[in-house]
Length: 138
Image 1 (cartoon, helix red, strand yellow):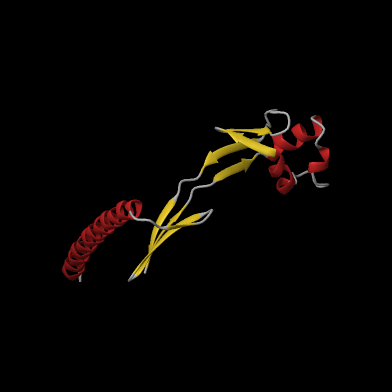
Image 2 (cartoon, helix red, strand yellow):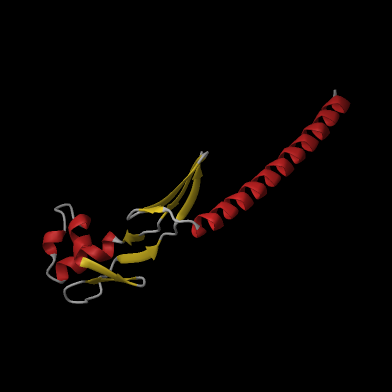
C-alpha cells in the first residue's frame, strides 16, 4: 500500500506541474494576444460613448470601459464635518451621509474632494482613479 501510495503521489505531482505549466503558457499567450488587440484598437476608428469605446470585429467586439473617479467615504469623519460646516441636511437621520446629494456639490482635484461653490476641502472623502478595462467579447 505504501509503495502504491508513494507512486500515486509522484504521478499526481507530475500531472499538477504539467497542468500549471499549461495554464501559465495559456495565460501568457492570452495576455499577449489581448495586448496586441488593444494596440490595434488604438489605431482604428471606433464607436465612442460617454463610458465605453467599442470596435466590432467579425468574430467579436473589442471594448474599452473608461476609468471613472471613485470615492471612499469615512462616515466617522464626514458626518461631523457636514454638521459643523452647515450641511446638516445632507446627513441622514441615522447619521450617515446622503451621498447622492453631497456628490452633486463636490468637485475633485487630485485625491482631494472640495465643495464646488466655496472650494472648501471636505474631510472624510478619499478620491482615487479607477483604471480603464479593455475586454475582448466573442
